[in-house]
Image 1 (cartoon, rainbow, N blue to C red):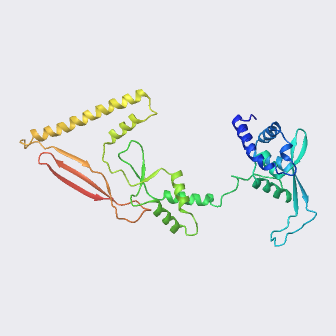
Image 2 (cartoon, helix red, strand yellow):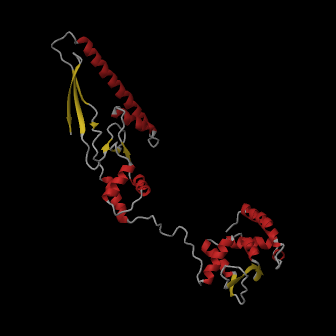
Image 3 (spheres, rainbow, N blue to C red):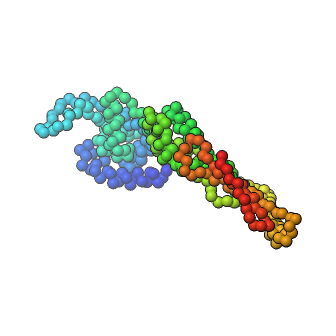
Length: 317
């Protein structure tokens, strides 16, 4: 493993500041290692691939001994230590005893880390890094996940009519808070949090609430989406642009013909011009039921171009 020069230089600066505290060491640890020795020790430690290997290596440099004599201080409420530890480091092929401060400085570790290693040694265990491997207390079973999935799928959806791609929408009166409340009412024994319900909804469903209110031509919307698509090649985009221009010219010609018919045929009793269309379906907004399809109002309109009068047929479904 190649050590980055910036890491090495940073470590040397780190040692320069930290070793000031070693001048008062009774074991004269600062005099036992040269700068070259410290660099070799640090490089050897960093070549270890995982934290487990590093902790096992450090554990092998610590000797644990029973405390032979305990002299509790008056008024000291702490439990007397039953174990003591000696720290070593390699200098070449030999081990050199050092103090705990020198040990921490040489390997650039914290006292919390070596204290954990010592605790494991006193228990007869080896270090084992469990970070990211423990099962979270908030993890839900596959059964609960299936219940949440089925509950979200139980709400009826509608497909956007004026869109270049298929998009499903839930009731406009619905939101995630209401959906979570309805889930707790249906499954009172399951303690599913709102945060989990929301995350599951966003990660597994591509649904929106309400419907787009802009009434646009579906052909125009489809062709515009094709033109804006970055994954489409230039030939397909040019074809879509040509189709859009042709579509708009036909629409303009159609509306011009309607205007002409209105102007020319006002005095012709034998000619009748009618325009009819299904208007946008309107959903009844006050129905408080979310698990079933909402009632909708359909409007069919017939417009007399000659008299400029309309007749509407309204029914619900």
